[in-house]
Length: 219
Length: 219
Image (cartoon, rainbow over all chains, first blue to last red):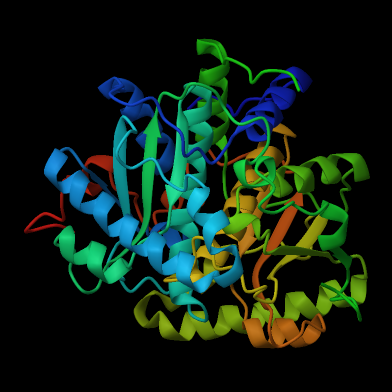
């Protein structure tokens, strides 16, 4: 086994550049494709993620059937309407946003939480949370991997998990948590799309950093 | 605003190398330190993570007080015993594993889920899950950032979240989800520590990859 690498300053800066330029994409080039080997590298990146007690609770369903993709798109459309209603005075503004690229993206992957395998290590007190965090780590790896492959990725969570599970024949003990749209994009947003369109602005890190305990007047 | 970068093949390979060599570390060099600017870069990486509806639900509490660190270590010791009991026939094997580096690591950071800010965008159907996934993405960024800073990081989840919340004065609407140990290490494990010590072996990605739906006989 070769000894682990030492990373240089320029290598470090490169990682930070990838993180800085990663975007949650919703605009894709329609009718584009991804090479199988590229998609495989992105999925391999997911599988390199850490998992609590090594349980690897992530499952990936690649949607290849156009009919199935269309049914998923319809499900997301429905949830978009439900969300719009709840947003009340921002309903129209929300409906103008492009919130998903299900129909146009080159590859569509549903990520599903596996049935609980009973792992106790590291999750006696927070079993569902820790399994879910493992899957989210895998998805974050895919996001960064897509970016260095010069592809966009978007995590769509606008769906009813029960309805999606039914559509994908997922057993009751599983739960879909993400629809990942991956594919070529015309351009990456310069800032998070929600900031760019004035929907919401992120806050600086310093507001979220505390010492030794939660502040008396913390956010 | 400068246009987004194109990443080359060698840059892509570098990211995959970082992911491949990232480890969940439990062995740290005692009495070591981390420069403030290095720790800041790791936290900046966290803050570059995506979040559902841009809610940025992560909060970081750096533990600077030695007394507070010791109380946290005691809490983790207690949970380690509870876990051991549950593991029954593997109890002794478990107790021989080093499962955390709370006392030795250079920097200890508690990550806490912020109170729900009511964000509806992308989380009408799975509000707690999507907020938690955002925080996990931020932690995964920290893991990769630590690795390129040539530092180890370990995510300790062996604690009772209510007891830790009390210790850190966290309001009831918040939830600690991670104790992150970060710092210099003598060496990175060649494989995940749990594999190296024969506790458990990871499975190949192909067992977790499906097409168009959950397989009839899927894991």
